[in-house]
Length: 187
Image (cartoon, rainbow, N blue to C red; front, side):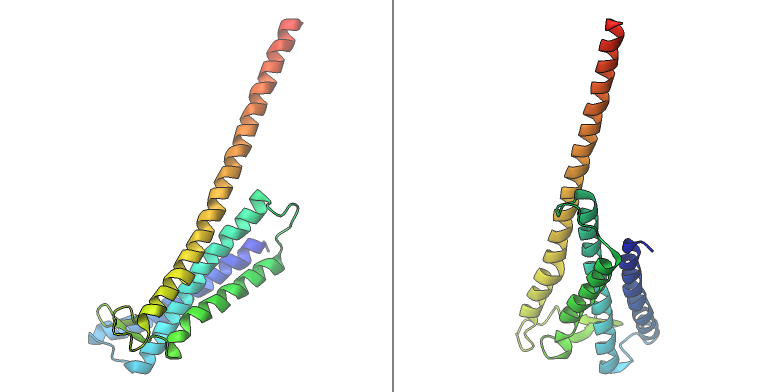
């Protein structure tokens, strides 16, 4: 019932979504050695894989923020509760939809990639017919740089806080030891 469990289940559901749809599509297409399921299935698989991948990525950022809030306490006595975790999970799905829907609406597109057995965003076309370059930049900034920067910020602050706590504890132990020695010498 921990608030962290909500975020971890969210991560697991996203990964299960990618595994279920992506594995089936890849299995069938590998058997035929091309995207035999057609353009609609390609769009569905590309959308699902992108959606699940983005939910996973943003869920990791939410875990980092949760750990930062709980351990570093930048907001004082703020208590991260279940409803905060649920709200964080909802935000991951909204952000993921914002990243996965555009190719279905005309900003870029989903195409077969690699060995033509799975689909994803069009990373390759550069003639700007589908505005692929701007979509790829959007994915890089919004779906990589922002969550990655969030994780780096949160975990570096967490490491700093833990280092300071360990140093304070070490100082405290050495101080206690020195006081015991002084007391022993006085007695």
